Length: 135
Ligand code: T46
Image 1 (cartoon, protein in one colour):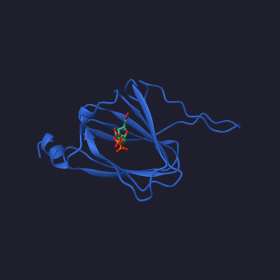
Image 2 (cartoon, rainbow, N blue to C red):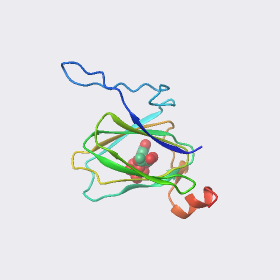
Image 3 (cartoon, protein in one colour):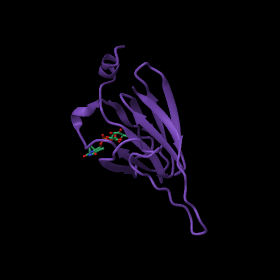
Image 4 (tube, rainbow, N blue to C red):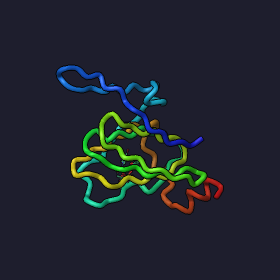
């Protein structure tokens, strides 16, 4: 079952500043994390992603700056999510077409992933995505 869900991460702040813990298997990250990567220093106006995954689940947090994640579910439902603060997270599970865009200059998009990197897990052709979704 594919889904896209915005989550609010709980900061453990005190007089020294903020800290957000993310625990695998907890409420925020509902899977075991096998990989972490982050995207930064993006070219102005660039659009990244433009693919779906067959098996991968992910949690995305823009830990600095801002960017927008555009998603399309298998049934064609589209949504856009502005990640512009480290307490905002997005959980993407199942076969979801995603694009990342409107990066601010200082954006650092961190992604927690449920699987190791596997090029075969990517659906990079939009028509193939729709086909695999039965559309
Ligand atoms: C996703 C969105 C949100 C690796 O070698 N290992 C990795 O774990 C990843 C993610 C990428 N790469 C290599 C493959 C390419 O040569 O890094 C290069 C850029 O990857 P890609 O063009 O797939 O990057 P994005 O920003 O379009 O997509 C990435 C993830 O690949 C994807 O899983 O959901 O971020």
